[in-house]
Image (spheres, rainbow, N blue to C red):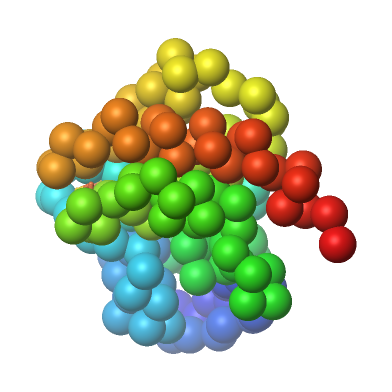
Length: 158
Ligand code: FES
Ligand code: FES
């Protein structure tokens, strides 16, 4: 079936099977491999993207359900080559080890900061509670998001 999905501001039209998952649409059809596929049980959250401004696990969404909607992936975080503060925070605070969970963690963190610019450690932990870091790097992930919160305004200024 023919679908049209706006991903990171670009409209992509593809003929897809109705059973195709959004995570596979992004990775295999569009070659946006920053979104990871880490389980078969909808537990890991490596696949988190935004669907119309809301974080979703893209392995729980059919590509056809995204027809006519907007998707934002980790490839759409940076702005004209400048890292998003969340990305900078993960870099500054060593918020990743193997990096497998990182794209999903960053997409959730970006959403959190957009809705709560000054989150507590508890807020951050709750926000990412649906996602797993197999390297167990949670301490540094939380620090990274706090770093982003503290540098967001400064970074956003020209
Ligand atoms: S791949 Fe989606 S939750 Fe694991
Ligand atoms: S950094 Fe390895 S899974 Fe999180």
